[in-house]
Image (cartoon, rainbow, N blue to C red; front, side, top):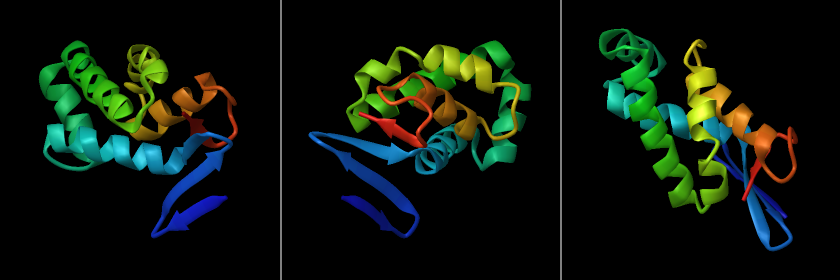
Length: 114
């Protein structure tokens, strides 16, 4: 059964579950935006102000804790690579979510599978 309410996507897959890549991207952007003090534009400004290396370290810790809270510790091991990959893109959350989708149990299906 798939659920969708107010743009929040989820899907049950047997005993496992998944969230939509777009929802995950938004959640990641919100978490990173809270650190940076604003939205996606503030994330870019934050990267410039603290430098890519420090921003990547902080973003990795933030996204890792979010994945663990979502019940996906196995995907958390890919976060460092995902953040490094995403640092050169305007929508960092989308790139991180797409990368995690490419590494989960059902790659590139539009869902981050837990």
